[in-house]
Length: 479
Image (cartoon, rainbow, N blue to C red; front, side):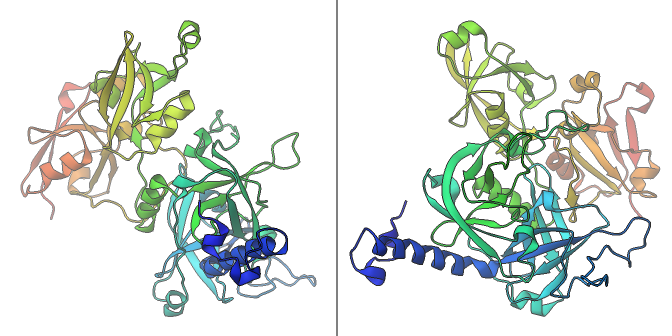
């Protein structure tokens, strides 16, 4: 960690006095400079909800004290739902927290530091990372001219006790675009977001960061701070603030931020392009170690290996104890989910394993994790004759019954089929599994695209099916 004297020399604020007023002035100067370096990149996000039963022209605007409806472009407008965001591209791309977003019918307005208000749309949203990117209409030249992208830092070297700065829109008081600041220290690292169970997910672990990885800070992150940056003293964003609702029995919850690391940058890059953020999938249902193993000081996790998954193909066994993933130690089931989840699709996971008392390394090429929740993707892969395919594992937990898992290995799944296209007319339907293209085996979307790249005539698709009469479909060329 750089010292304050290295960032802002004490001679500039009080000589070499390292105590008393000189030290306080140096800290003050560091905070002022960090805020000044980043605040032009922070925006206020207003979410306006459509009134029930109304058409899209009638929105839920907040009334002024006299009962008149105030428009979002009016400085006195107070949104019912609000948050913060950071500019990540001069083309008008705004990063925020996914949980700031609402229903599909909601409208979004961005207020920049120079008090300009712009209508924004969701370019992409990923529920697993809790990240989303909003876009201001690129035709708005004024918007692009006033966008100042934030400087991204690196959270990898963070230590407890480092001073951090927050910028955001607490309780919508920064709706004029003037972000409110706070400061504190890094309280802890690798924290887990508090689970919030509901009917759709009893575990309450809806994001990757419910399994760990969050920055904890004692800087207060009030309602509306979500989506704002957590800064270091250089004015670089090293985390994205995600204020958490208070849990029962506590006056307030801890303050957290999503770290700017390799996973963050990978997801952000995909969302800025409007693409889906993808995560690696191993195929193990974790289970705790035996009492004797724990007593012997062994750390790790074992699990049930699902058939047809990368873990099964790599030869993992039920009694194997996984002790590390790419060198990161595995302490429990959550740490296994987190470390595998940090990796991308088709990444190689180097697993440290204890098998029959012997330590060894097993390399596993990961497939695609089936992300739950509402994903928003505006740039889809190009369809072939009306069909889009995906990794078979993407359907494992949400769309396919347990008994079907053992026979989908070595195939891609049909994700979408456009109506009235050659694929649809040939009988291709969503949820079918394709194992061969004109006799060529395909296991991944990349292999599928390579197999059909040069095809101009009719193409035979072999299916994984329990019905022998429907093993092959012939897709004619497009018109």
